[in-house]
Amino acid sequence: MNNKHKFNILLPLAIAALLASGMVAAGQAFRPDTPEQKLLMAEKAIAQLYVDTVDEGRLVEDAIKGMLEKLDPHSAYSTPEETRELNEPLQGNFSGIGITFNMPSDTLYVIQTINGGPSERVGILAGDRIIAVNDTVIAGMKMKNSDIMKRLRGPKGTVVDVTVLRHEPGAPADTIGFSITRDDIPIYSVDAAYLVDASTGYIRISRFSAETANEVREAVRRLSKEGMQQLILDLTDNGGGYLQAAVELLGELLNPGELAVYTQGLQSPRFDAFASPKSRKPLFADGRLVVMVNQYSASASEITAGALQDHDRAVVVGRRSFGKGLVQRPIPLPDGSMIRLTVAHYYTPTGRDIQKPYAKGERDAYRKDIEERFNHGELMHEDSIKRNDSTIYRTLRLQRPVYGGGGITPDSFVPLDTTEFTKYYRNVMAKGLINRCAISYVDAHRKEIKKLYKSDDAFVKSFEVPESLLDELKEMAAKEGIEYDDEQFKTSLPLFTMSLKGLIGRDLYDQSTYFKVYNRHDPIFRRAYDIINSQDYTTILSPSE
Image (cartoon, rainbow, N blue to C red):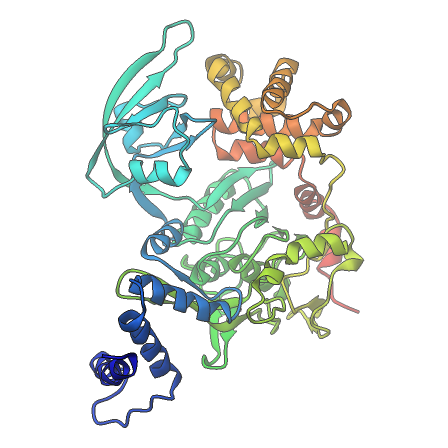
């Protein structure tokens, strides 16, 4: 049978498949010239007539990806495994053993056990090395974090056996076996929440997940009891997450009923989302509020910052945000894979489009936007910020000018400081040596540091990175083939000491300790703190003339 005869048989088969799938109703005239029928016929022809064996599932996946790549930069396809990994951080929890860990070189090092979690309950300690999981030795193996997590995570109630190597100062290393029953482990989106001074609170949000608003509520209540009257909200490097999480958070910062954001698209009618506090009244609708953003703040971060700016509720400090203002609708597929299809744009309450310009199908250029901003000088000079939308919008209460067309432009610009950044520092960071060096130091001095500094505040105030630790870092770098440069090392010394101290504090105390150290060095935080404690705050939030 020749190919022509085969195809004459194939066409009715394709029609039957279309009828069975519901893509063409029974009795409806079959039109082989429609795009969806053309696509199905092509796939069937390849699957049944191609000279070699083909993976039909892979063929369809590639076709879906190919179609989506011709659209906007955020429409995408994910496999079942990728879909699970994408959703997990936003759902607020997973089932596992409850540790934070690092892999300096080829050893799994336990940084902390989660309070009340499965590992803490069986007696695993910070500083332990997990050398085997079930029957597999993992020490000495070059494994990705994702590979490690696959071994440690699993359904709630299942058991995983781990072998731990424990070093106690002054004693020989000991090997201990543990059986750990997996349980639900929370994924926190609030990285830090503390009082900077007697009345100024600081909250850092790393992502917008299902539990973000609840975490912020808890942090605000605690800080308020401790004396907080004004708040710095840090959204730098926050890539976004759930729209609803941002709206819920805004419900605690805006007056009830105020517009938080709206979405609209060609096939999607306008949808307004209003601030509606879960508590009886908003937890922090009064009191000075400063929001920190940078070029990596995106999506839900921009919705939050934009709404607070539009309602004149906060001063926004930092650099123009990323400009991700496209709404993706998840379309689950039967095998667990998913299409995230862009269906609308996000608009701030004044009507500003958050999305930066893009050309369909030109994803490489879109991804290089931040690099282009750097080359253009925008990250260093306020007058280089591109105004993609010539319209001047006005805030809703004070009629201040604000700008759209791509991201949120801050009220107070903070340039990117590159004066301490050197090639030597970059190479040391790229090898993960600062982290390895901090882990090594904590491992050797954990008890004496905790004894000397009873609290992280005492640590932040008084601990100084010893010269011997900096020498150890240089030695590590040399062993990795990084040529020492004394001038560059001295230039980057503030970055080296800040990073080492912050990581040591994180490993000894908690994540907030790192930001207590880092924020002393961060220009955006320092500007935010200056503004919230000065007349600049009321000057910025004054009616436009």
